[in-house]
Image 1 (spheres, rainbow, N blue to C red):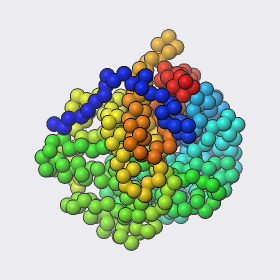
Image 2 (cartoon, rainbow, N blue to C red; image 1 turned 60 degrees about the vertical axis):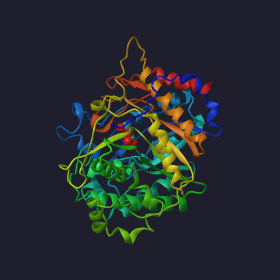
Image 3 (cartoon, rainbow, N blue to C red; image 1 turned 45 degrees about the vertical axis):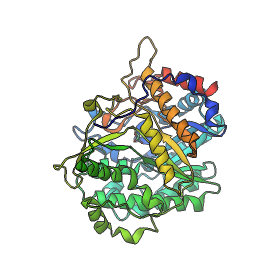
Image 4 (cartoon, rainbow, N blue to C red; image 1 turned 90 degrees about the vertical axis):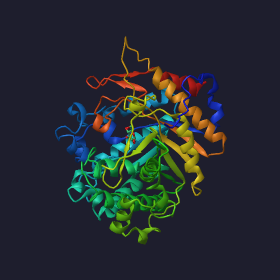
Length: 460
Ligand code: BGC
């Protein structure tokens, strides 16, 4: 077994001091349209793949629907006030593509544009810096009917969407994130079938990855050309991958998973083309399928920053039953190591190592942690949520970030996932990540102790 260093009992509270992160460090929260807005058919919004997916039996825990969600659409003023009251200065949100282009292309919905204008103006009014994510997993259903991310038309569609956003918001929004976790939506949505649009197998996964890579770079070029003074990034998930034993077959299995989880999207972006791992037949198929070698230049773009999002470390063993990948995870619970309500391993040291690793690529100018957080089974008791687990989580992860920063990694900010509890994709409303508790029946917001902890930390 591999030894994992845990710093469970370190007295971290007193070690953490906001000043240590530097005066220009950006502190913020992140949300996403499909998870927060609700108002799914209000003011001319068209349906997204998540509205459609949620109707399918058994796809989402508790048969939860994203239709109302936590009603950010109507409550954005209150929620932004909470961001401000907790002491943050950055607000990251995504644009619902089908709210501004109900059919995905063509006609622009002026009411949709007006909503985001209100959100942006309110941010600026409160002194919050808006960070706009262009794509956070909610493709218009109309485009999915024509193949979605697996369609060769994707680049054309995404270009149009990006242009509409930069034209409408570029005068006031200077921070742009092109894609949120492309590995997340391509693998969960187009290979494993766990997320919308629920496709399984490799047939659609290959083109989805390829099209996301093209959109990632082209989106960057477009924002650069359209928005003066823009700071442009894109957000990657990352997870340290550890072999279960040091047997050669486990080590090789971990390398394959590492390629998928950590290398597939950044290496083409940095101009290195698709990553390869000797003997990894999936990647050989990918190359043949997408004739990937022809595209090295078009998948490259010089981002101003890379967004990193690290939710877990993973331990991998060889498993011959799994096609192509021949690997599977040994879950944290099985290994009896600390984990969150999602079953995700808590390992701040691995977060530290991932920050250093992405920095060492060379060509990465700046890293921003564009999401970080954890779900725990929060209980509302007498109007209070004493989420000590979450506070401890943030303390450990911020401590790890500081170590990486002190080692010379240029980290410019930390955005908490997330402001309020929200629609956690296929987990429905059960998994709660917020600093603020939401009763989804009444929409009542209650600041958790972790929210107060941040307020005290940021205002100290
Ligand atoms: C996604 C969020 C999601 C969070 C927790 C991230 O991968 O960007 O949308 O809620 O993980 O699962």
